[in-house]
Image (tube, rainbow, N blue to C red; front, top):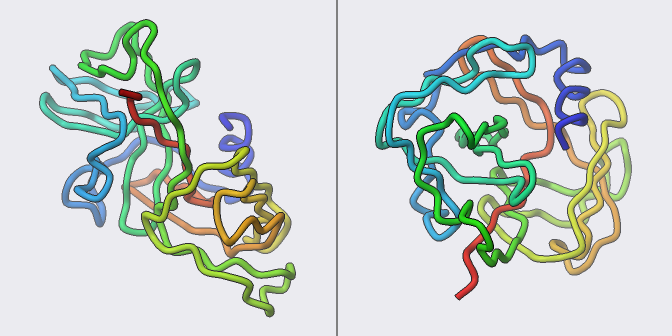
Length: 195
């Protein structure tokens, strides 16, 4: 996923540099609708770096972000009204409390849409097959996507959405926070602690 994110940023000519603020009043923190998933709570101020080493996000004590990439590649999910993107989290240096990162934590994952997505059967986006509602979730074999052309992505829902649809096409979502841009498909794997 990390390599694809780099490719997406390059294709979109997005700055992929630091910034915060913008349209979000909560600095990208977890929304009420997703409180049941794994969260990292920051216990002190921290700067999260982007792929080029610049500051992507300044986090303050008490701020809470969803986690993705568990258990091997933890990242926080920055929520935006138009979608979401991830920022790599260095758990060795970040001042966080996160029960889902505990050694031996049993996790169950599912995929969550962070924006409404219309899936089409064709690359020209003429034949609408289904709509994935914002915050809809589903489990499956995985959710894959790749850039096609003209801000269109092919998606492979992996059985998670649209009654087992094998593949389809979606228009890319665009998120800009400060001078950081992200273009892609806002579906992320989130986790819950198994009881």
